[in-house]
Image (cartoon, rainbow, N blue to C red):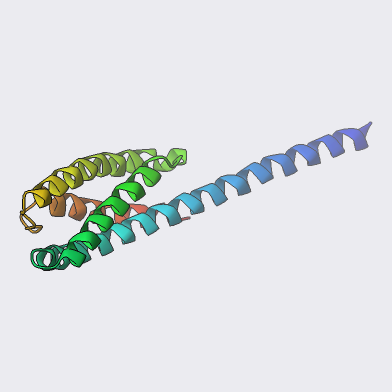
Amino acid sequence: MKLRWLGITLALILLSGCSLVEEVNNSLDYTEQATSFINEASQFAGSIPDLAQEAVSNSNAMEKLTEQLDNMKARISEFNGLEAPAFAKDIHEQLAGYNETLSQQIDDYKEQIQNGVTDFKNTEMSQTLDKIQETMDQIRSLAP
């Protein structure tokens, strides 16, 4: 009888340990995905101003600019669809809010491009990208 209880107790300990390991793995996955997204947003923010300036006189650059804007919108949608672990919900919601704003600003900027205006530095988009980049320290603090 004691062996049976010992066996049940050990099984419960192992099962609870497995869920703890799974939770840590999910946390690491989210942190890595969020870090990757913020790095991509930083690269996007760094490349768009020069590309926008070049797009004024170069149709290939204009196509590349439009493609990068579309890719960023797709990446935003993908990131916002992530399931954040409980401890990261607030940061994820903050990033998702910035992302929704950025997505709308990308649409607005694409409309400006259609009208011949490619000035990126004076758009609200660059400010939103700065806010996204500022969350990197918060994301790093989540890593176990």
